[in-house]
Length: 96
Image (cartoon, rainbow, N blue to C red; front, side):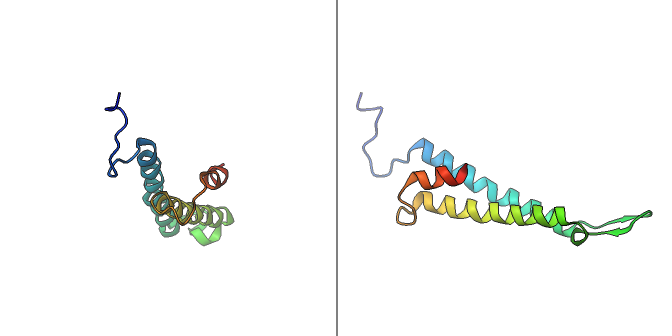
């Protein structure tokens, strides 16, 4: 029974590692979405040059992706640094 619960200081709980990994995986995906949206330019014979700045919906999407990137970074860092947020309910509520 003692083999199931490691008592070492180097033990990392699986749930904490999964949470950190998922939050960390959001960062490059959001950054890729930002870069792809901002740098995409199309030439249409009917409408002319179509750019990211021409559409308010794309501006909104870039803002949301930037917020998601920042939030994921703060949440991932605070997983390991307990002095930033010591209440898990803060991230539970903000994740909702």
